[in-house]
Image (cartoon, rainbow, N blue to C red; front, side, top):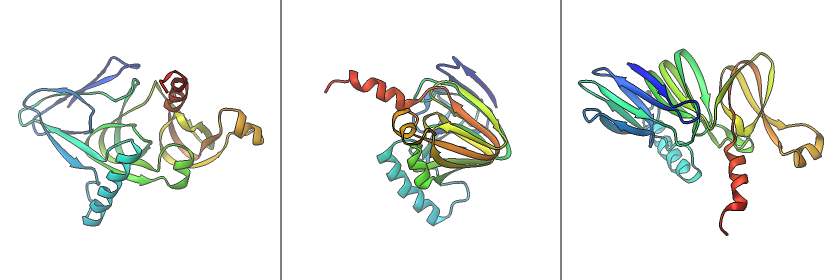
Length: 231
């Protein structure tokens, strides 16, 4: 497999040259183009070792996520018996990061997954009330295994190594890896800080690991655009 990320960091696009027999798994709707010999198969993303009940649960989640947005929980498998290329791009303008996995686990927030190759397992992780309060969605994606991972952002991506505790504005969190635990807390400043600072609730990551941040906030963009929209 040969991969190249072009037009970054602002409008990144990924090209993957598949050798015969190789398969790349991509988020639904991410394909820009592909060579005609490259076949595409749509599959439910329930995890590689999912049993009947896990797949049934995945179908239920798929309907929920269709209502609330984010990953559709359906993915496209691209493969070519004789080789060929696939071009992929995220929905938003931003960066694409390539990460080789050798048994590690990465948790990605809504919309961050782009593609993967190899023995990589991608499954939904319930974020619970903390995920909803943090406005990162009720579900996260948990990516683990051995292979290649590409994830994306709105804006550029900054990686920070955390050794104790770290606060991240909820709109800028892309994901994290290592022995990190996420909780939700106030940004500080008491009641006035919660109401008037513009920060509100933030994500608190504790432990040791790496956190990935995006330089732009999609919710902030929506708030900025709202006064200019008709009606």
